[in-house]
Length: 196
Image (cartoon, rainbow, N blue to C red; front, side, top):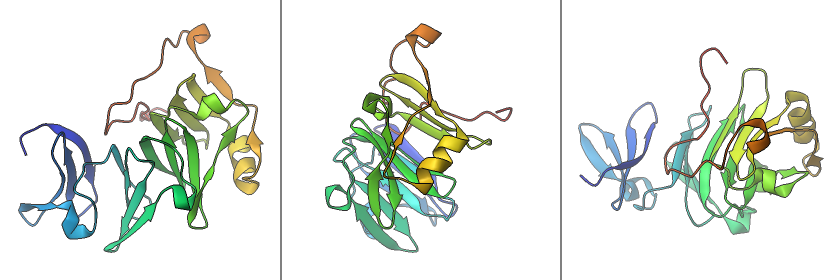
């Protein structure tokens, strides 16, 4: 297991660690346990996150997201509406689970993933970071740059998720935001600071 750490997640009772070129393990009880002991694949995920309800979320390269809650694994993939490609980021955005990947952004609703459509589909592609800030604005970092969806527009979309989100802010090279943030497995390209 000395091949370098790719991803880490503290689930409050153990530490999940995905080792590069190796496997996914959980440290608990003074030793490493392989992921298959919990019903998960041993292959390290691209990203991991902890939901507000304690669910551990794992995003994979094959457009798959796995959820581990109370010892039960749920798998979401193409059959459950998730077509994100490489899932680079999973986040619990105020009780709404979002999965972003190179092909787009998806939200979990009613046991299935649904696409989150923006006026320019490329604004929701190549997601390497997501966060819901204290004011309720949803931030995405992806192919076109940094996107801010104002709280009112995000809430309106959640009330009618078959629609398309318009009226978001895009910060790109014209705003001094150069290039595209590259995906680094296990690391979000967006973080909230204590001062907002």
